[in-house]
Image (cartoon, rainbow, N blue to C red; front, top):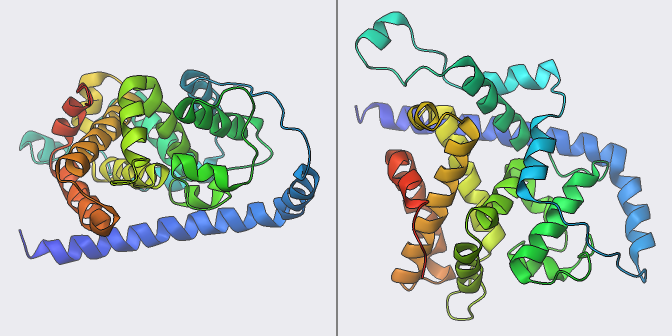
Length: 290
């Protein structure tokens, strides 16, 4: 079976590249429509008082995103990324990924579409979720965080505009970072604490976005199908897989006394582990971090 490995890697790389291209195209469209808008806002934001924060919960954001109308073209291109339902013979010989109920397959398609949805100025929910997330992790809840600025580094974004970092997995990346806090505020605080510890710091949002990419990989290969059937929800399977993988990262980072020098290796090792042992990742979501 090792002969297939380079072929599979090549195929994965090609799919990833297509994914990035689709994201880039969508981003260019948005920039064409919204660039002048953003420039106006940026100019207008200078020296303005910051408004009070309008907090949204993970659940409010989740319902908002899951009930948005889907255009057929987007839906079709997302569905092509999922493994096809197994044929009779493959099912008979238990060789295929488990078949999903139509409802769960629909949920997976929605998740893939959400991963292709870039941060958009025209949907107020996007900024509200981003600001709520900042408030949850930093404890700065009195005012809304400005749209642009170096303060986003406090939650691990790389630049002054978080939208740039979200390109790889769209609004699903933001939603899952919010879920991490909602699932266990105390565990999320441990992760944020380690991320901002001068001895072992790491960019939390960037690590999170990488883990959301592992979720997308697991959706596309079908390894989340069995857990989805067991849990009765594609979103729950995806979220618990994400959380458990993040908790596993935390243990590897803290326990191995890792620093940014080893981050590439840790992420690679985590990727392989998560795809090989999805059920172990989901089980890890029940852990308490210390």
